[in-house]
Length: 153
Image 1 (cartoon, rainbow, N blue to C red):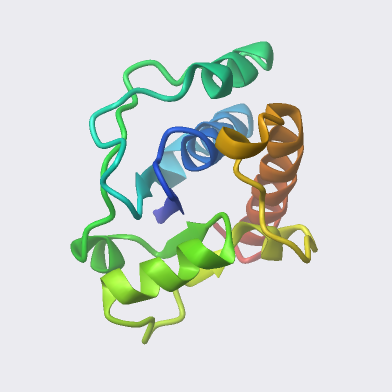
Image 2 (cartoon, helix red, strand yellow; image 1 turned 90 degrees about the vertical axis):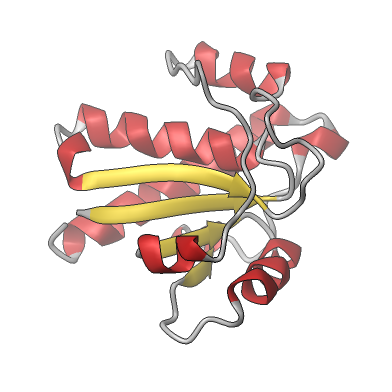
């Protein structure tokens, strides 16, 4: 089983979008039983809150539900429990490495790495552009899925 944890600042926009996009991709490929996919925040601001309504609507436009998802904070044990910890922007990576005490096993990555994106995935909480976030996150998840399948997932 491959365990993937997506991480962003508040866990109400980008990381839950990535979580549910990748879950949907795994389900459509009949591979859901091969994955454990979740998401978390580097901050405490939104803990316990549901996915931000515009992010929820963007997922719903594509037939993806995120019902029941509540923001949670990244925990030190997540480094042990997940194979990949994937941040949305470089600031997330800095905070993830600080929280985890480094990255000795090379598990921490940027989502854009998986689709050749040479920039951060902009936070739609600030930009308001949930369509751009969808496109970037979907491309990153598609690239991640392709890489995992190529590696025998």
